[in-house]
Image 1: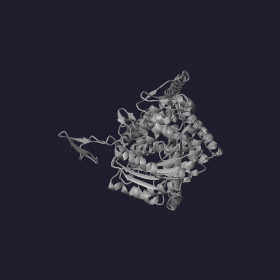
Image 2: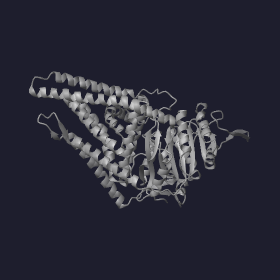
Image 3: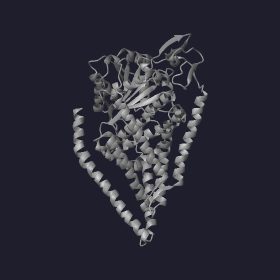
Image 4: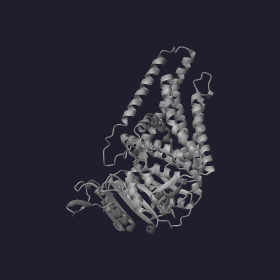
Length: 606
């Protein structure tokens, strides 16, 4: 019987006695009995009421449209809903600052006694990125006798062979074991007839009839597990099955042989101290089940998209997740850099792999669901900016859209799962999930209402307000990071409004479509479906803008109020255009010019 953190499920078995966590994993069949104490029931009730209160308050503020500040002509106004959003950003930024200050002042020690398995998931990876990844793993500053390296390649064809050869080359002076597996953990079908695959059946003639003796388990499984436990550095090529299948192979093969499991993507370059800093956090408190690090962008100079992604990543990790870490409830331990307690991971490994949504097996959102599973058993999840890595991000607009759609699908699906465990964690998790969950719908309603019911000044005013708030947030990020480049984060809102917002609805409508989402680096993107919601959204906005222009043209602009509005329109448009021209010039000459050359030199040096 294993109770884990206070107030979590009790794992019981109907056919065996469970004496420890290892038995709980191996015993079968396993039944999970939820025995909730009165305190847990009360926490559930309070959490539900709190979530309803937050959702109701946000909805009421939006519907009421109450204006807090306005001028005499009511051309300038700032409402209650806008004030709530500003308040949310201020509070979030404040707790992020406190967490950043705390993590830098704690000076955690490492015992160097914990064993770590660093797992790498690879799929059609660019050879240069993979080499950088493997070299950075090789240079990790953690005792070699406590560190294992396992890379699993999603694909076993001749075209995938170069990744295994790269692994052999980089770790040629180490204890290396490699395997090309014709199957994976979930494709073994011993009942198939001879000639249908790579199965080997022994045929025996008895009593005048032919029958086949079939192995009940793939011998490749035991070979994989023996290889992983016998060698320090292991590379496995297996039959394609998606990223979750790749991660499962590494986790399953490791079993209980290590204390911690680190996840890493094949396009990620680790800082030498990345693993050490993650271990320090997990060692510091038994309540911590997982910890993530700071993911930076490796190819930020490739395009405007990759540059903006680098700024967005910094905000997501060092403000949003830092704030969540203050309350011990980070919502997603990112795939490029995360560390999990292996004893806990093995408890929910099967349920994590076999996750289904609306009857469809889930093959994306692996990292977010892994984090959710840890949160579901009551353990805290943390973030530390002292552990860092650099990861590739799509530089092409279409690849970036596909990536964002995949992430949005997993976000909304995992939002529903996460809601089941809000009561086990701080109320901040409930509050933030509710606010973040409803935000896109309110933004959509606001934009459509302005474009079809408002005037030209109303549209321009909301654009100016968004830009002012974005600039304020960007200036705060400049101060927190100590880098003026974060001022360009003020431009991200337009990218969100024009591209990310419509794809969120497309993601929700296609949530059961499963794939890696972002194509391998060697493959040209062929999925143009994400352009459909963008076309519909832009068409709706252009139609609304045309309708608004037509309505305003019917107005009598000789009236004093209309002349004042015309003046505001001219001045506001001039200010908005001037700001974008200034930021565009700064980006072209500063980022693309000076910083772009510096980044290229840095990449060559690395």
